[in-house]
Length: 234
Image (cartoon, rainbow, N blue to C red; front, side):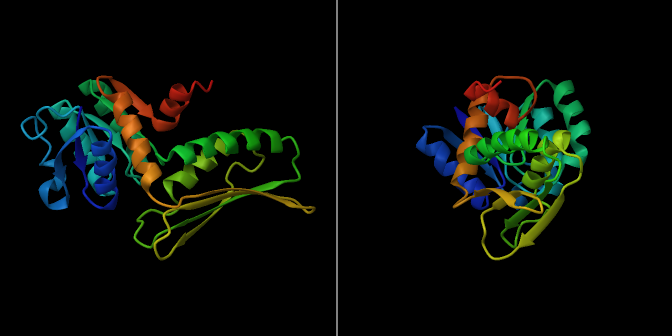
């Protein structure tokens, strides 16, 4: 299989390492200067590509999706900060007949954490004296705050909570790969659930998992649903 990289920064290079390790062919590698407003994504440049993986910038995502839809290339979107365009993107994907997987977080561990938080919220909601809250920390270069992952966690919790908008605290400092804490606080005690990323490797491995799954498929999918299907979680 052949993978293209949209965005060739730290995440793009790590996805490349994982792909090569698993026997994929990699190319083209399109960074900011090679792909202004999606101009680098054409049928010619993408010849033979099964899936393109996007870890670019939020303001580049829509251009990349539009160009990929014209070129007939399936996508994995690991970039966050664009979900206000979700309805438009879904329409583009469905009308063009490509396949796309997006996610706020492609880490295998974080997707397990999503399942844990969803279950905990459902159980703890039966005892209304607990107030929920979220804390997230990322490196200083991360553009969006709160993180897409924190927003996804809040969305998972929302159906079970008396307060449908739990407080989210964001920190941007140094080189933190990503920390997320979900808390439930009462007068008597505090319950904490935490996911702490040590590196970006888990994100890259999840993106390759998604790329393998979406190759040859059509439709618009969230990675959490793909992950649940792969693991047989119903």
